Image 1: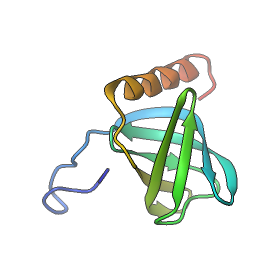
Image 2 (image 1 turned 60 degrees about the vertical axis):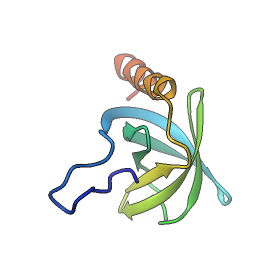
Image 3 (image 1 turned 30 degrees about the horizontal axis):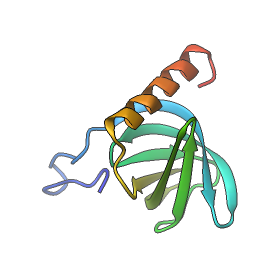
Image 4 (image 1 turned 180 degrees about the horizontal axis):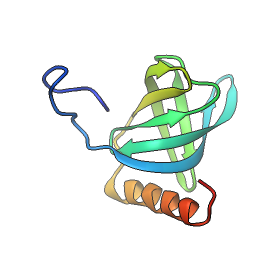
Length: 109
């Protein structure tokens, strides 16, 4: 799972997280709300939102052309960690990073 350590608290994470700042939408059965993707890896991401998320909650994340199903695996205050149902392929991961770079360049992030 994204962010989980392999061998305890001092171990290494399974997936390297890439810092990004990208606006996205999180859709649930209750509705949708805006989120910021703050870091991303092929297997998951960290989101920031005024609504947070509940552990176990199912989400559809929409960011630009990317749509991905995910589950909340941890939540604290206005942040949550999600794990994607299917890992992002390299093309999708690069597209997210490119979208984030453009948003930063244009002053939207």
